[in-house]
Length: 293
Image 1 (cartoon, rainbow, N blue to C red):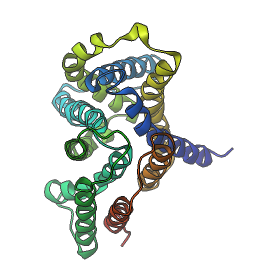
Image 2 (tube, rainbow, N blue to C red; image 1 turned 180 degrees about the vertical axis):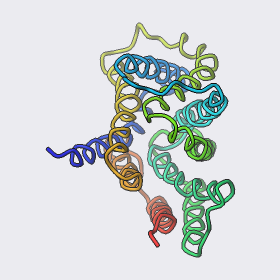
Image 3 (cartoon, rainbow, N blue to C red; image 1 turned 60 degrees about the vertical axis):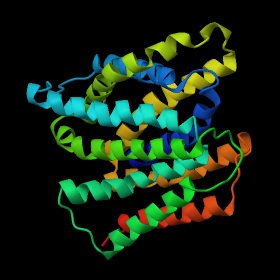
Image 4 (cartoon, one colour; image 1 turned 180 degrees about the horizontal axis):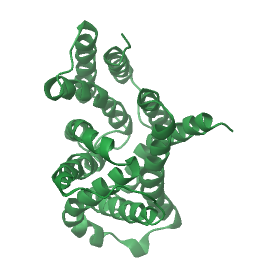
C-alpha cells in the first residue's frame, strides 16, 4: 500500500473516531464520571503516552526557553480550555449539535487570521462567515427534543467558546510547528495543558465510582482516552506528514456525518428540519470560507 493511501486512511480513521467520540462521551459523562474528571483521565494518560514515544525519538530539537511561554499559551487554549469546555458542553447538549458547532472552527480561524495575521476577507469569505453564524444561531436556538440534552443552550455556548479557544491555539501554534516536529509540539502542548486540567478536575476524578464500573464502561473510557485522544492525534500527525494541510483538514466535514449517524441510531437523537437547515448553512459557510480562488 502506498504511503499516501495509508495517510488518507489514517486521517479518515481519525475523523471516524472523532465522530463516534461525541456519542461515547455522552454515554460516559455525567452518568459515570463528571466532565472535568474525565478530562483528567484523558489528558494525563495521553501526556504520559506522548512522553513514552519520546524515548524512541531521534534528533529532536531541544525546546528553547524563549518558546516556553508560547507553549504555555498553546496548552491553555489548545488543551485546557478546549478540552474542559468541550466535554462539559457536550455533557449538556446533543451530540449532533456538538459535531456541527465544531465545524465553526474553520470559520473562527478565518476571523482570527484576519485580525492577527492580516489575511484578506473577500465577498466569498464574508458570505461564508455570515452563513456559518446563521447556522450556529439556528442550532443554539432550536427546540428539538431527545438525546439527553440537559441544558442545550449553555452546552452549545460552551462548545462555541471551546471552538474559539482552539482557533486561538491554531494561530499561536504556527511558529512552534515551524521550529519543532509535530509530535514534539503536541507532547509539550499536552504537558502544559495538563498543569491546569489536573488540579481543576482532580476532585471529580477521585469521586468517580471506579470500583462499580462494568467492562463496557471501561471500554468506553478507553475509547475516549486511547482512541479519540492518543491514537486519533497520532493518525492526524501521520496524515500531516504525508499530505497537504488542506487535504488533511477537509476530512473534518465527515465528523458531523459520523456523529449524527451514531447519535440517531444509539442515542435516539432527533433529526428535525431545523437541525438539517442549520447543518446546510454551516457546511455552505465553511465551503465558501475555504473555497480556492
